[in-house]
Structures are given as C-alpha cells and as structure tokens.
Image 1 (cartoon, helix red, strand yellow):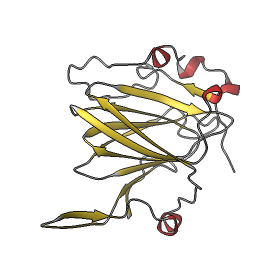
Image 2 (image 1 turned 135 degrees about the horizontal axis):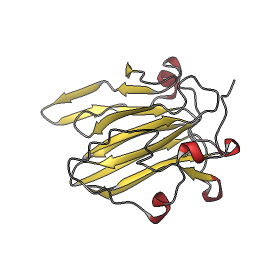
Image 3 (image 1 turned 30 degrees about the vertical axis):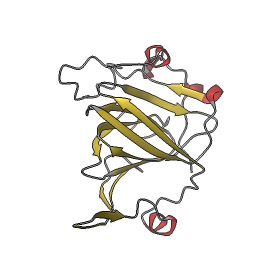
Length: 187
C-alpha cells in the first residue's frame, strides 16, 4: 500500500500492491500495521457495503458527536468519491477533494474525522465498501447538500440527473450550518 496523493490535510489516496497473473489478482486491502506506517492509525469498528445504480448520489454525510474516519473503495464499478473539510478553524475549511474509485484502478480514499463524505455512481452499477472508525448513529448524522454553491464541487454528471434520498435533498448549505453542528479541529 502506498499513498499516491494527499489532496487535503489528512486525506490520503491510496494504491494497493496488486499481484496479478493468468488466474486473476490478489491484493491486501487493509493491514493495520502498514496503515499506521502511512499515518492512518484509526481503529475501524464497522464495515459498510452499498450497491447503487448509475446516477445515485449519496452524501454529503458526517457524524458530529461520534465522528467517523472512513476508508472507502469501489469493489464493483466506478464512483466519483468526494470529501469536504468541515473542521471549524481548519486552513482548508470548505475545500473539497474528489477521486475516481473503481474496481479497475483499485484506489482507496482515506478521510479522517471532520470531513463530510459522498459519492456519485458513474457505472451502470457500483458496489462501494467502507470501513468506519465509529458506529453509525442515525441521531448523530448530519449532512450538506451535494450541490452547495459555496462548495462548488465539480461532480462529473455528464448529463445525469442525480438520484437522491429525501434526506439528502433536505440538508442546509455549509454557510447556513450552525457552528455547533460542525466539528472542530482535533489535537
């Protein structure tokens, strides 16, 4: 595993070492010791797996009292994955980074706590897996609209009309989110 990019402070785009031959491939997708060497020492406690059709946009989500660092990857298909720095006092507050994750490139994205996260499905179907450093708590979930004009995320829609949940249509813009509903910088 190696870091190929660090688009925002703490965020890492990772490429695994892939061993391929005529039978297929093998790769190590997670190794606690190796990840710690790369500066990722979170204790992941929950794994999630979603399957979505082309055009589904999930996010931008975060938890406040029980923040989740996430390690994400597409194991089938292709997604455009996005993180937004929402840590009050961060020099990169309100900045976003995006990366294409797919079963072909096998890239993974690590986002520490304090980042909102979302993804758009680009292929006909995508399966998306992520490790989380805390348990999901529906009462603690917060979010931002995918199309917040202040964030100006360059989603690769290519004529797609995003398919959203009712919840993801209702989030308030970052500029209208109360300070107490945003995480601060952690020491």
